[in-house]
Image (cartoon, rainbow, N blue to C red; front, side, top):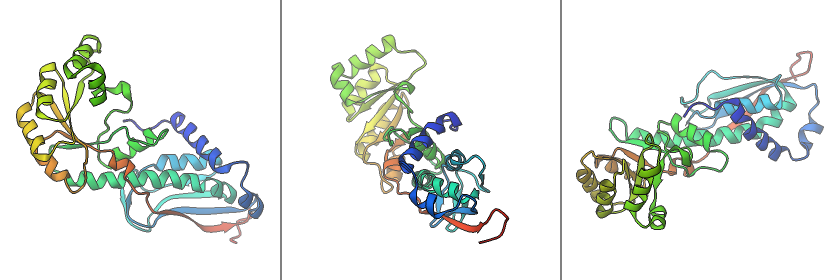
Amino acid sequence: MPDMHPLQLGPLIDRALEEDWGHGDWTTDIAVTTTSLATAQIITRKPTVLAGLEIAQAVFLRVDPRLTVTSSISNGSSVASDTCLLEISGKSRSILKGERVALNFLSRLCGIAAKTRDYTRVLEGKKTQLLDTRKTTPGLRLLEKSATRLGGARNHRLCLTDGVLIKKNHIRAAGGISKAVGRLLESLPPTLKIEVEVTNLDEVHEAIDAGADLLLLETMSIPEMALAVRTVRGRALLEAAGEISLENLEAIAATGVDFISTGAIIHGASWANLSLFFIETMDPAGTLL
C-alpha cells in the first residue's frame, strides 16, 4: 500500500481536531498568552516501532502552518525508551492544541507496528508471510494498514473491490462453494483471483475442483492444515486464519501454508506509551521563561 497523500490525511485530521476542540480550549486560550513560544518533544516512555510520523506532523501543521516540526528518525524504526520521535517549535498555544490528537494517532499506530513486529519476528527465515485483515477501526483503515506494513506484514484486501474472498456466509447464500465460484468465474474480471474460506478437507477438495486460486483455512487444527497443504500440492495458495496467536504462529508456519492472517495485530495492539514535553518556553524577544 502506498504512503498516504495529504488529501487523504486532511479529512481524518480535521475530524479529530473538531472532536477534540469542541467549542474551544478554555485552558490554553485563557492560561497561555498569544505571544508565548516553545519547543516541545514527543518522547517514548517504552520501546516501540515508529509508525504514523507523517500524520502526527500533519496534525501540528494543520493547527498552525507556522510551526516547525522535525524528526531525525523514520517510520518503521525500532526505537528505545526516552527517544525523541518528533520536535515541534513555535507558538505554545498551537503546540498544546495539537498535542492530544497527534499523540492519539501516533500512539495507536506505533502500537500496531510494534505488535506486528512481534509476529513477523517469529516468521523470519520462513516462507510463510503475515497478512493483516479488514478488522480495522472505522475511518482509520489506511493508517492502521500502513502501520502493519511498517511492522513487517503484507496488506490483505484494503476494501471489497481489491479481491474476491468467498466466506462461509457467501457460500450459504449462494448455495455452495461450487455455485459461488462458478458464478464468479463467469463474470469476474480475469485479473482478479478467487479465494475461498474452507473449514475441512471436503471443502478443500470442492474449492480446488471449482477453480479457486487461494484457500483460506479457517480455524483448522494444525494437523488439518498440514493435511490440506499435502492435499493441495501447490495448486492453490493457502492462508491460515482463526485463533492465531504468538504461541501457535511458528507451528502453523511449519505446516507449509503460504500466509497467516490475523486481525489481532490491529485490534489486539496496545497503544505505545508516548508523552509530549515542553523542553523550553520563551517570550517573543527570545528570553527563556
